[in-house]
Length: 396
Ligand code: GRF
Image (cartoon, rainbow, N blue to C red):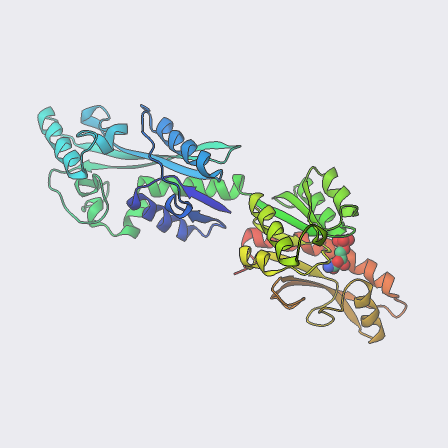
């Protein structure tokens, strides 16, 4: 899942990146310039919350992706909380950081205050079109009139955090992020995001019965799987899978070869539909067509297939449907089962990520074996998706 950092401030973006990279979240952070978004939002509000939301909303309207924006300021006790929301333009609209620092020290000296206690405050606004939430981070300290250090930005070189003898600008990036207002706010956000907001978006490709898809959808409904099913793409509009998807309120797109000049064009249409639905993980659930390079390129290591045998045995072009089970019985195998693998450009050859075994009984026909294996498939698919969401199974 992609989240945009709604800021053009390269210092802030760097901090966001650094803090996020330590959190092991299943999300991809992107910046306005990466998405060719070039807007500047006037911070006209008188609160951090208002300004953060203003920015988040403006950037969200440009990209329709989940967005986080922050507003941060320095609140100095002796100056009744100033510069606060005006921190970045305390010395005037076109001022640079050093003008702001000079003005702050001058104001404090003018005030005759002995106590130069201050706090940095960050408010993060997360917005995704459905949810708008705020997260807070504070770092308390003192202002010094002796500028020190070359790291950081803004007021960092005149702010000494509590329990430290150095200014923010003298601390390493890691040290600062561990205690900083923005670091704290991002960590609150990350926790809430992991536990309460994030739902992996699943897109299905299916041609037939769709019982694997149905099992996954039922697990989502019953809260056994915390994910969001967003789309079914099928090459067969009469399929049972289509009916199941519709009854679960999923968007269904019928995309088949007959509508295109060639398979490549068909797969480009499929890839676009999946991208537009912001799919994180593609689930092949009895999809009878080969997944071509336009889809593979857009979703590297993000496409799963389930196969009704213990791969690498009984996989490949000719092994589908009942053929698999017939071959297993003909070869007097003692066990079979099902396999989930990552899809690559070779039939059933991608990395195996999960398997369940099923005993082959002496009296088994291909049909009875298929029935027992299908039951295990229904367990294995949701179980594996859960493990991917929890980070127990890594796809990269
Ligand atoms: C399953 O046996 C699966 O292993 C294979 O296709 C079949 C799909 O069954 N890839 P269903 O459509 O999910 O019922």
